[in-house]
Image 1 (cartoon, helix red, strand yellow):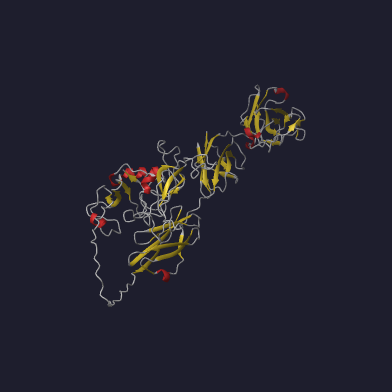
Image 2 (spheres, one colour):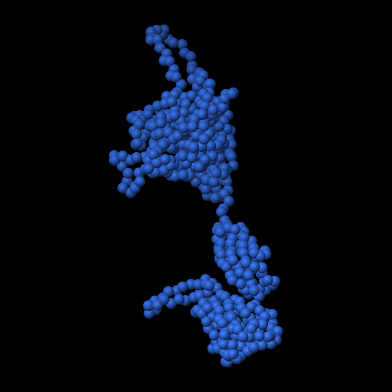
Length: 594
């Protein structure tokens, strides 16, 4: 029985108040109508819940089952021949002064009252014969021996609302006929199925609850000990729903565009779960763009097609549960510019011949990048690379497909990103994580803050996955340093800024004539050679360097910052900027070997 303690100061003492009356005692012995010896004391025993805070017990023995002679109000018997009562502290009593009460060859009835500060609870009535039976005792006044409940359990300590849970109980003997093992979990008594020693019942509760298991008669009167347990019911986890993508642009207005002209579309997406993440557009010419969006937000994306013909773009929205939306597809006719031939005119005078200085041809620079197959072999496409370039990854008979690019300027090998949802997909992001204390600058970072497939979404797990694959024959893949990754930046106007170690850099410098335009160019993103590094996003990419602030006014940390090694450097392949960012944030990565 649950109790509530209320403490109050009363002349230096603590007053205890109990919230409820005790449960009725369970009579144990004398346990049947078998005649007892008339020359030996009669031992009365009973039990009661330990949590009932009993202050005492009152035993009443009478010659009649209606306890004639017992004054219920005064709690006393008129004489000890007809009725006997006494108050004890323990659940047992031995009646040894037989002549004062029990008469040989007589039938007697007894009951027990449990007492606490909230009141009294009375047991059932039991009968016995002292010596020979005076007359048959009604079977309803006999005590049937009951087994004990030894343990109760549930198959799950916690379940979602609407799901089932099984409550099990063990008992130490068979249940007599006419009695049942029952559980009360807040909705009344429910019978449990089974046989000794195992009983169980499966229920569908609607809320968390305590429960009690005991053995009851047909009138739901408890006849055994009770054992209590509990379970928790949690709110159901909502089912994730895929986002819905919509095209806001007029189809007729986006069905054609001129070569080298800006082509713009507007999209929006909604997600019933409120976990919309981004919209991605594959432009159909080996380039793509992605942007994070909010639910219902209109997103405008611009692109420039440089080759005449028909290109088909596709757009998809994604949520943080990695579900994708419906796919929107649109064919675009890319029209070549109309070239008007110059008008021929007849000169009115004879031109003067001006001697010219012969031009000496400058030999072409040797190619910087070379394509490496998945098995580590070099792909035989040098003639293509030295010519007009290529627009798609090359697959040569007898070789694996293009997977890496070797930079002969730095002798480094770089991984190539894919667009197929696999381990190396361009869209995946990772938190910065390095458990090696000799490499992490004193702070390991975060283990799983990105969105990816094929590994845990942190840089260390991705490095291990690529090394396990031995991509391009290499098993020493790693994050590039800040300087190595900055070496891949290609500025739109060809003007590079100065590189400063461990400081924020603007790699692509603006000419002094136009300080308001950092790039002095209309478009050239991502800022990388997209022929040899396809599927590069105009986004931030992690380096291996931990940010270490200097004491200069430019980089001095604020007074409120207590740890300086929780950030790492990354490079933005939109305008060539570098900056530090918290290692727990998500960014993209491109691994290097060598």
